[in-house]
Length: 208
Image (cartoon, rainbow, N blue to C red; front, side, top):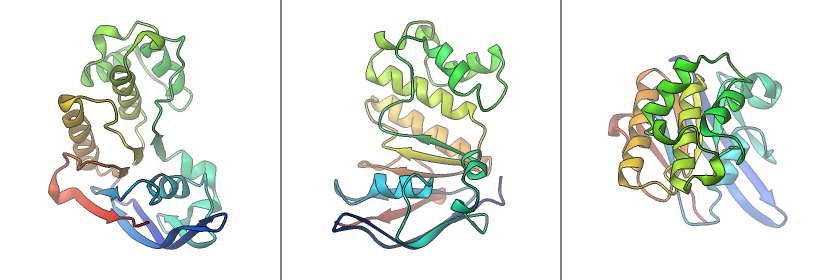
């Protein structure tokens, strides 16, 4: 995954008459995480949505491996995992079943692989309970298990430590560090500093 490069070049985006993204520039390569900071309303989530092609900039472009992401969105989407504010879990399914169906539509999974991912994030003990019975932090851990199973180079994370205790926040940092060590890259919108190795961390502060 080390040949991966993601760039934002002079990205402008408006919402109505509000200029949300104003000439945003960034460039990250495999082994690096871009930490997005800024006050509420500064455009952190908007930038993530623009990167993955859910919002289109009026000016500028997002490129992946030298090609505009909009040239072939399905191919680009196959290379990324997006984890938003709300974990993408079905409430009536168990955590294990969610991983089987959510990640399984993208790649073949084994029971052992799902078990390992659940254990890795501390979710094994309650993996067979319906998601509707889980706490917000437990749901977040189940979603993190799915993230690790995706096996894609690019992670886009919107407040990935939301609803997690101190140990859970450290877990997010470890998972990102491991992803970077394998040549992956990540963009994370945060309100609090990530516990990620400083050598792999880049920062971009957005302003109102």
